[in-house]
Structure formats: structure tokens, C-alpha cells
Length: 66
Image (cartoon, rainbow, N blue to C red; front, side, top):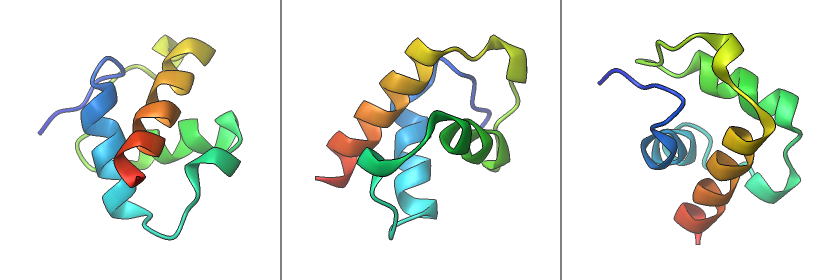
């Protein structure tokens, strides 16, 4: 699966699976951004990320973890 920044829900699911011991409410955006870039299948331009996208990914991860 090829992931892009707009695939917020899919990214959150992948992060939840890859890092089950992480509390997504305690993440710094710099850490979150790096983890997204490291996901298998992620293939978008790192410069296309912004705070709004990271907030959406973080919230989707929080929702997924509940």
C-alpha cells in the first residue's frame, strides 16, 4: 500500500500497529513526522507535511487506540 500525507486514517492505523506501546497524546510533532516517514509504504514528499496534517494524524491515532 502506498501512503500519502492525505491518508490520515490509514497512517494512524499503521502507527498504532507499529508502535502499540506509544501514547499518541504525548508525542511531539517532530517525532510523529519522522515515524510517518519511516512507515513501510509511505512515499510522499516530506515537505508536503504541515502542522494541520500532523494534528489530524495524531487525532486519528488517538481515536484508533481507544
